[in-house]
Length: 226
Length: 409
Image 1: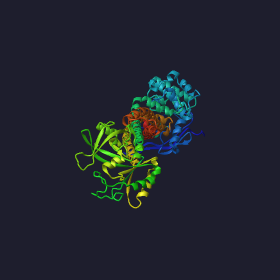
Image 2 (image 1 turned 30 degrees about the vertical axis):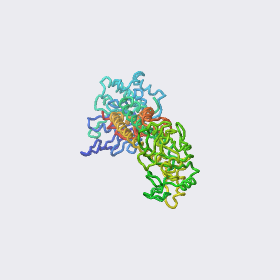
Image 3 (image 1 turned 90 degrees about the vertical axis):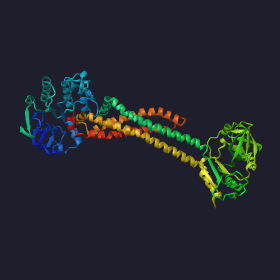
């Protein structure tokens, strides 16, 4: 494949300097994820998968090596550039939903749209996304605290999609949900993948991992099996 | 929802923690009220004092230089002056008076006066009184009679209102000046023909508590004709004080210091400067309340940041820039400051008015620029203090590590 991979890690190392000695979280990790893939990153806790997720999500920068997201080397980016990358190229879906408690469901989805376009959504995109995720207009007026976990995660997915990102990054997206709701969320993510989106799920749940096209197993900061 | 979602978040955060925010703003309210009402009080006091003083500050008082020289040639014990009771043998002579008139006549009214203090008797009551002697031509211009008329004979006098009240004098009352038991003393019985208008504090002569008599009567009692105790210059324009002082100095003090000149506008300057120093001092004390307010704003902002660490993490992770987070918290501080300052401004108009009424006694200067300027000034200080106290918490929020922030609960 000659196309630019959506994510490319080459010999990525992440060291956390601590007073008790440096901690090697990622050890010369190399991964390549193509556009449109559905990848599960798996590994036990402490394996470095959260660190990897933070690197891919542009929240953290590797100590050494090359990390390209949509072709751009993130080690050479300023804080503002990294922030803009998170805003435009990455849709984050968290285990704990992480909606902004001060805003309604609708406003939560609209928020990244406003940050990007510097204006309110007049295209109806926010409403459509919420509708697609099964959140009706009445529910959209509620604050996150007034919604169920499943509803919150649907709102979070709508928020992740609002700026049409290249990558959908999911961190244990079903971790805080019951099995049935979790399955519904997974179905939505699968549908999104079928629609052509790149979906990366970080999980320790094999049942979730199995639903992906490809599983990358991480152990001790290294790729165990790609 | 308005375009500025960052501002929205600030407003909502304040609304969510309404009571806490209100208490923080209350500190600013108190600070603004304290500073502006103290400032207004000071301004009103200065203006009121200035007005009172300027009515009497246009006076130059010329006296013979106590160091000697002068027109007087009498040494201690010298009998030349003929005054038995005068404690001051230095006087201004007729020539010197003419010199003064020549020098500053164009700037205002020049009039000499005699002054002494003597034992008096009203009915059975004995006492002491300050007695002024004025030339007949000056009487009409310098004195204002409240009741009765100016003295026309050598046996009639006018008295000040306080003096009249203290001794129960009315028109027609009789006063014996001089000690009747003392054989050597000259004694004169006079009749009150007029009571003067109240003059208040004054630089040239304090007639409120004195007897004023014609020159002839005075000289008859104490001797020393044309040996004036002081010469007053009532200036038409207070700004001529320095010029007039110089003119007199040039005329009389060229060779040696014959006279000393008291410029009462100097005194006014020093009084108003004392008042404004006091005002500044009181305002500084009031400023302490703003320091307390600053601490409380700082505390509220820090709490807001700490409580919202996770939210800040979310905001950062989904694409909110550092400076936007910074702005969000600065907005919060500015809103607290604006609300506090606005309430404070309204309250300081009410409280300031009351304070001025109570402390200065008049509110006629309250709605002047010099007085009301303290309201916007205090508001600005209040808002500035808010922003200042919000800077560190906001900076801290903006620079949180998003990963750490997301992890916190």
